[in-house]
Length: 431
Ligand code: PLP
Image (cartoon, rainbow, N blue to C red; front, side, top):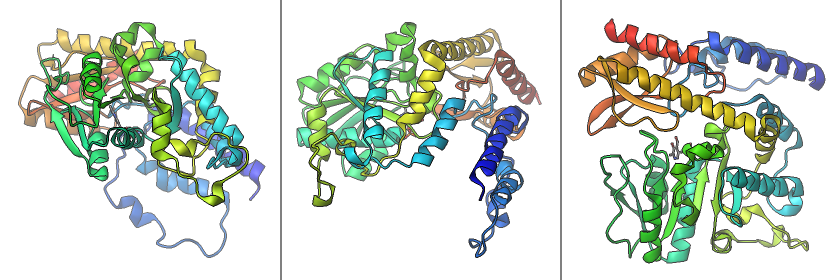
């Protein structure tokens, strides 16, 4: 292939995709298996051109995309893959740094540590914490549970009934017992009376369903009094701490033994990029260090493989570095503040309406609401709204009731898009 010419065409494709993503349906309008039926069953024997690949992107792949880059994507936690990060991903692949030990990539190892520390400072977290990048919050929390078990010699995990399912999955994979705690009226985890046999208490700041905030300070006190580890899952909401006014939700986080925040959720970095910090780096490292002969070297330098499950690590810090530099902290704060403002606006429309109700207080950029009708009616509204391709939202359950979630997190989302979401919801509710 002609790397320069094909590369220019690929970049042009990416630019054009981003320009027209607002015109594409948000939720993929295909049926399961539809793409598979159009894909060749085997790889080609003879070489094809890169232009063939780009052509098939348009013909085969784009129709099967759910467009996470759409400004009308309000599902799960909406995200943004920023332009500097997209280019950095290309460059990272070009350099293909596999940072298994320091000398295998001094650049990736040292940039990752520095960028993790930049974000630590931007979020107002304590000095001296070690931070690095894992692929996902699921892996970051897995690493925290492994360390907690290593340190305490115990096998029990406690979290809120609204904690993310990754906590349960991680505990299951590790053969650890999971205890789910009930929540109070504000959907905050009730502090368990006894945690003497617990390895890890997982507190969530910004739960997936409702963005509720557990009482981290009280949970830290209970965990530490009993010799347990406190892990904080702020995968979504933690990014909001770049704005000082959102740090109310950080109360007690300075006491955490570990913390996860996902820049791939709300800091404009494409998946995957999960930051995990620990205030107890020596014990964390002890849980993972294992150096076979073939990885030994004389430099005795730092290896990030000693801090988590995988050996090979890709150059994830590059996209975070590029994003932080090209936007600057002020640029990022402005985007997050706008998302929070837009969520407040939407929540206000819901509150002012007799036909809809808020089912939980609006927190960060998430609004949880429902049509004043039956669960079936709400389910049908959601199905019609998503089938329209105009917006994409998801549902959850609160006390057995079916409720709708609108999450704002794409940098291209404007007030006009949020207004359109409100119009589409009202139109489909009244149909
Ligand atoms: N924790 C919370 C609070 C989440 O909302 C999510 C995903 O939405 C996760 C963890 C899992 O994130 P990941 O996909 O990075 O594993």
